[in-house]
Image (cartoon, rainbow, N blue to C red; front, side, top):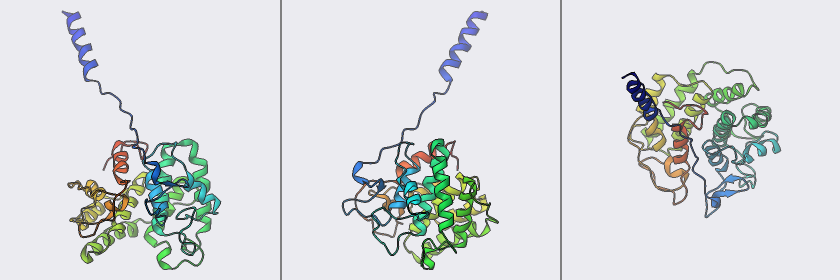
Length: 282
């Protein structure tokens, strides 16, 4: 009888033990690469390449090229839109910096061999940005806001290259106010998508927003139909076919055109825990 019980218990353990699964990133088609950055064919749009590349870095393996990081070093700290700069007099923006932070933090978490070069690149970037200006002569709209500065310094602290930022109140309040104003005015929605990416970055560096901020952000984004945001807020997700900006357009905006969707593999990577290098939980 004891042998039968032991056999039954052993069989139960074998059949009910969970099977470890390895996340395999969805590869990005080669037609969307130019000089190691992600672009949007067929017009080879490069104006948002650093943002696209950062999102891709956050979902791809350690063999994905870190051209973005190396380019920051070559430019002595500038987060350039693309090596073939499409806007020489306007080479960067807050969008590009958010994309760079997302990709570099995720890569830092998952790929230990890349940590020294990421730290060095961010150290150069911190020194390059003077007075919040992302490049010399940058206007206000191409400079760091107080809210983004908090996250920017938080990333530097996480990399061990600058001091910790102060109170996160302005960062959290800005997430809600940005979404609320855009929904009220039915304006272009890409800043809400960028706000969501900032929420992810904050969590990856150990500075997650609180439940009150999340509630406010999710309330302010109801009806936008932004896939990543809807998933975060535990609402039904509706994907729109096409390239990256398709999922950064609200229900009242027109789609951009066909292409490869970057946000889908990014969301898969987030929910698998791959992007953060650990289990990802909302």
